[in-house]
Length: 205
Picture (spheres, one colour):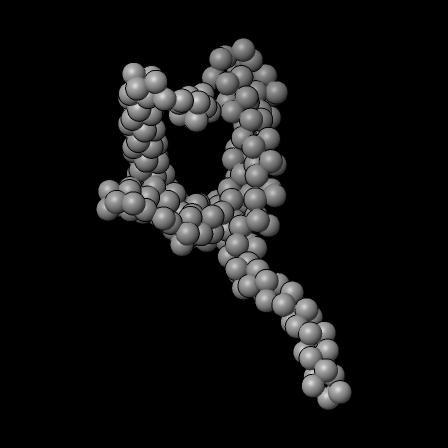
């Protein structure tokens, strides 16, 4: 009877132990930076609305629809300036998404690694420096540092755009090469009289 009891106890304890393993693994996978990125992503919608309202105001001011002597013109300028500062506040901690992108980077060549570091690293630096630009415009940091911070921010944004565009061009070339290979394989299959439904569905998708 004792061996049977031991088997029952071991079998009853094993189901309770197995579910714990995936739970523990998922908890380990969800580290602090991933949680922080998900939390900060929730405010992107507000940032987009502020961006639209700011650029709409810029267009109205640049179009000369309103005379400069009109009080509404001065109010729109003040609104545009305040929204610009507010948008910088919404970017606090946004560089974390670029840090996570670099951490989770999977590359198949040295070129992709270099371009990804340029794109994500520069964009992360841009968002990081923008925090100090906001602090300087808010008055917490001495305004004498504002010009240098804006220069660093502008160059980091520019280099980040170059890296991102280069990555997209590389991805498009890769997609074109894969599509050309699929088309050639379809042509060979048609000549041989083989079925090529799977390849054709890949091209359509």
